Image 1: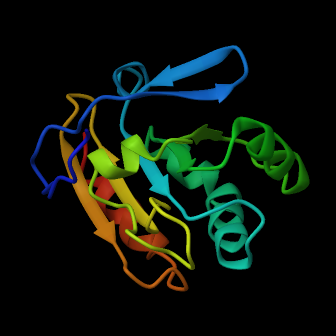
Image 2: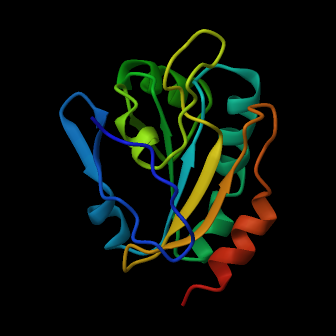
Image 3: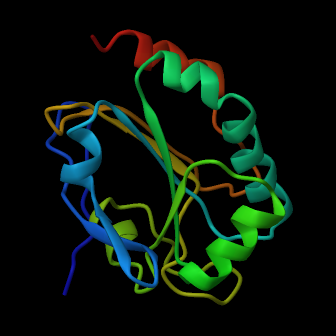
Length: 160
C-alpha cells in the first residue's frame, strides 16, 4: 500500500516509472538526468481547465527549454486517452499515465474523492532538479485554479 506523503521543497523526489505509450515507459531518474523537470499533475484529459493548463505549458515551452527544463504532464488517464488528447491539442511534451494513481499518492497529490472518482490527481506542480531534489511545490485543492506559470519560470531560473 502506497502512503500519501507530505513532500517539501528540499526533499528527495520519489522516483517513479510510468508509461507514456504502449511500449514506452519513462522514469523520473531518466528525466532529471537531462536537467530540471516540471512535473505537472492534473485531474484529467479533455476537461476545460486541464486543457487550458496544458496548452499554456505548450505555448510557453520555449521559455522552459531556455531554462533547460522539461515539462511532463501526469494524470490517471490511460496512454490511449493521452495520445488522443496530445494530438487534439498539438502538445509537444510527454504525458504520463498514472493509471493506478500510485504516483499521485506517492507525491501526496491525490483526491480521496473527486466528483465520485477516487485517487484523481490534484492540480499541482513540482520542479525536480538534476540531483532529484524538489525545488518548487505548488498544490491546490481547487481544480479550477491554474498554477502561476511565471512563478514556475522564476523558480526554474534559480537552478543552475
